[in-house]
Image (cartoon, rainbow, N blue to C red; front, side, top):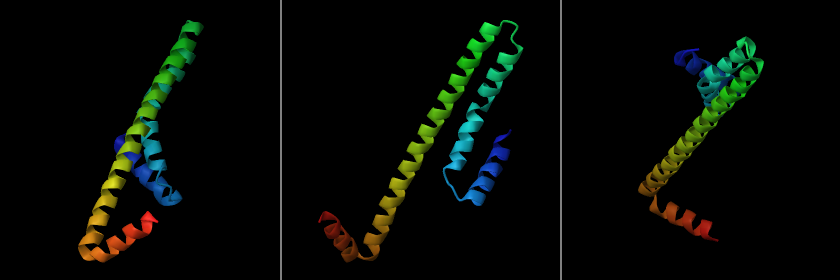
Length: 110
């Protein structure tokens, strides 16, 4: 699966389900997909069954680790972008009506 196909699929899933978290989840699956496929292939094809099982768990855990790191990076990036958007939104509101910002600040203190 190419990145272009994945982006189209992520957009389609978002539009159908309206769930924004499924897009990054599909990105994580793309990151881990090759390792999981290799794990299953080694488990089935390795002539030494014990080595195949060990390699299966090794590659599966490596793929899941990559998936978790990808999810963590996406989560941090979205959080950072959200904070930047809130900061710019508060700056835009302050530029339009300073009294509104003061009122909101006094209400939030109580």
